[in-house]
Length: 93
Image (cartoon, rainbow, N blue to C red; front, top):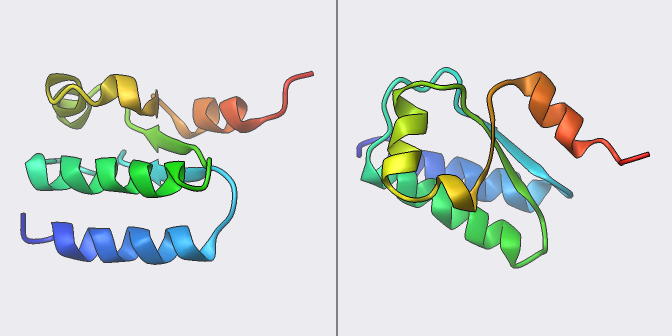
């Protein structure tokens, strides 16, 4: 709850400064509450306005469980590892 505003500001700035798919790595996150879930959903909405994908790296852990319980797991492209996320971003063929 205390870090959500800083996270939101950092994501907003990074979204403005980048192009293409946007990757958020939650591997080192130990706890995610409703404030953090809101920040992730907001980032997805901002990226969606520009037809950009949000890719979330989140191995099976309590944070992934929160995404599932909050009902946002289906809204996000969740990957268990950086390698799988990177593979998903490679052009087919």
